[in-house]
Image 1 (cartoon, helix red, strand yellow):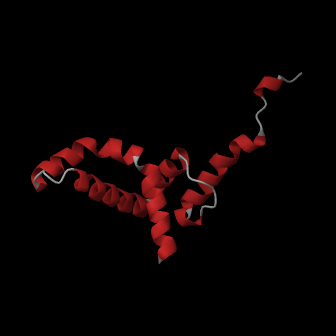
Image 2 (tube, rainbow, N blue to C red):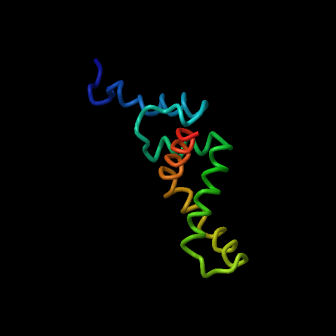
Image 3 (tube, rainbow, N blue to C red):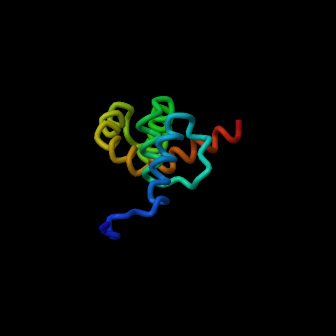
Length: 103
């Protein structure tokens, strides 16, 4: 006797399979809309993408905090970096994909 409530729809596994498969290759080959999970997984598994995204987010943060000196900003960035990397993951990956499309 099987308990029906424990059976999952196979499509529930789609995002995870897609993420694992594509984050091992390049993020620009993704054909589905980005969500937080796929963006964060890609950042965690692709060092080149993560480096680019961090630089992009850091530049974006720098435009907001123009009144800080470089030294103040570096201290500020160390403090806010984890939050900005998390909340900006989708925007950063989208910008990376768009950059590749324009090249």
